[in-house]
Amino acid sequence: AAGVIQSPRHLIKEKRETATLKCYPIPRHDTVYWYQQGPGQDPQFLISFYEKMQSDKGSIPDRFSAQQFSDYHSELNMSSLELGDSALYFCASSEGHPKKQYFGPGTRLTVT
Amino acid sequence: AQSVTQLDSHVSVSEGTPVLLRCNYSSSYSPSLFWYVQHPNKGLQLLLKYTSAATLVKGINGFEAEFKKSETSFHLTKPSAHMSDAAEYFCVVSPTNESGGYQKVTFGTGTKLQVIP
Image (cartoon, rainbow over all chains, first blue to last red):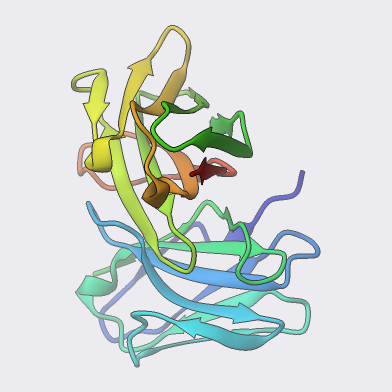
C-alpha cells in the first residue's frame, strides 16, 4: 500500500539559509500534519491543512510557513534557519479531519 | 531496512481489565523501539522507549513493554485500563546510533484503544 512520502530525506543547510520540505500524502487523503522532533524530544505539532486550508496551528515559528496544494501535497518553508531548527520533521496524512494519521519517514534537517 | 507492524487497528477493553497492544518489527540494525500515544486533537506523547538496556521497559501512566528479540516483538501492556487511556497508540522503530538521534524512523499504522465503562 502507498504510504506518506517526504522529500528530501536528508537536508543540510547553513544558518540563515532557507529550506523547503515536501510531503505527499497517501492517495485520497485530504489532510496533512507537520511535526518537528528535536533530539530526545517528543514530536511537536506545527501545523495542519485540510482541503488546502489551514485547519490547526501549533508551535510553528513565524519564520516557517506552509501550504497545501491542489494535489494535496504540502510544503513547509523554513527561512532564516537557526541551529535549533535541526530536527526530524514528520509529515502525517489522514482522510478527513480529525482522523487517524499515517506518518511518513521524516526529513532530517541539519543546520550548521 | 526496517518495518513495524501493529497487528490490531482497533482494540476494545473494559475499564479495569488488562490492555495488550501488539507490535512486531523488523530491522537490519540494532533497533530502538518506542510507543507513542495520541489523544484526540492532541499531539504525540512518548509513553516509553527501548534502547538496548533492560528488555522490560516501564513507561508513564502504568504502561510497560517488553522487547523480545527472538519474537521481534515489542508489545505494550497495562494491567488495568482507565477511561483516560482511550487514544491512538503508535509503535515506532529506528536504528540506534551514537548521537542518540534518529536516522530513520518508521511509524506503525496505529492501534485505536477503546475503553468501555
